[in-house]
Length: 181
Image (cartoon, rainbow, N blue to C red):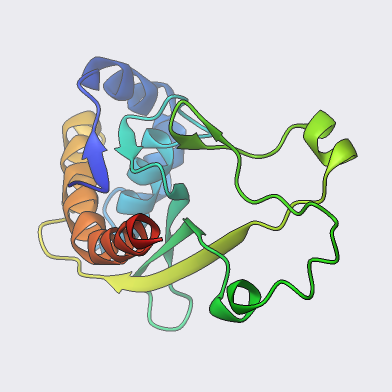
């Protein structure tokens, strides 16, 4: 199972990178690849590119890459759909016959409840926020504006590999726990 992968429509992403060249301007010539990688990731994911060039597992609600203000390193923030915590599933005394609902699913995807759903039923949806440093290994350090599209494509491919490595075991465990119920 993959939690992150690249869409086959790379041309749409490369066009988006060229269209957003200004987003990369301050990162060209920086000896650290972090700023460039963050700009490449943002250009490859919603809301800037929707549907994204980077695709993800149905449990992933959002995934961002940011520069860590402490050491300038690369930090990923991934929000995941999660089951309710154990204290809420052991007993339903808190339920009080209110008809609480969890994450709606549409064609196998977790979705936000509609305004109509929220007007009729209370919803309690669990999420996990995974924040982790990512290695800089393999990230390109562009020194000029030429070929930023190829460097951005490479940066995103490296980030997808790193994120999949970190997030996949968490998602697999969440899916295993769900199947066991």
